Amino acid sequence: MSSLAALALTTLIVTAIGVPSWVDAAPNPLRSKSAEHTVSIAADGSYSVRMDTDLELALDAGWSFGGDIHDGFRLPDTESLVPPYLRAHYSNPQGTIDSTTADATIETELHSVDIGFSTDELAAGSHRGVLDYEVAGAAVLTADVDAKQGHGIVVYFRPLDRGDLVIESAAPIISVDCEVVAPHSESCGEKKGDTWTVSGEELLRDHTVIDAVRITIDSDPKSLPAPEIDS
Image (cartoon, rainbow, N blue to C red; front, side, top):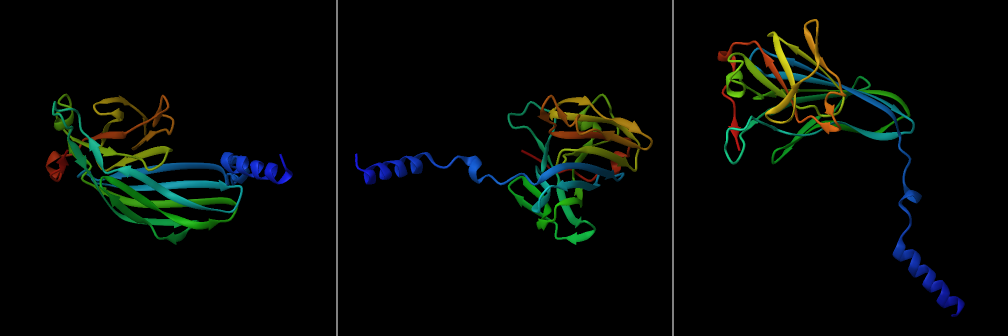
């Protein structure tokens, strides 16, 4: 084989195999990250969410705060072939990065809701992103979900990112349960003063991300707006 032919064959082999992915892989800029959601529930079951994210970057990098979730909460099985879903409505997104206002948005596609904001570049070091938004329609009468309770309101919440959850409520909190798939759930978190705290580890039970957090509050069911339930 001539040297030109050998060179052509070598080029062909390299092209076919490709360059190993690690050759062009960019180094991970993230040194550490933690997130905490604070949910403040009104007596009618609507609530506001404050998501605090702390970052430690080893390199300059762009970053996104927030996440993508489903806008519906699967209610316990009613023996229908298609399970009913409680539809929630998300609004009023607001964001800051290191105390500077950011352009937060809510984008909906089918039943996927993307809430958050992005920054083109952050300098290496520590940063704090805060995302606020409001949720309505994520509550039902307790009796519709669990006949044993017979009173109150059940409020559903789904976190945008992994991390701890702090729950505040205008009405007393009766219980908090973490659901993998409704109606299968387990009590989670603990009461601390007037709040209820669920750790990030509990929201990732047995390596399975919890589908939703179900919060039961002792509130007058007459204050609950008519829920939007569909398939």
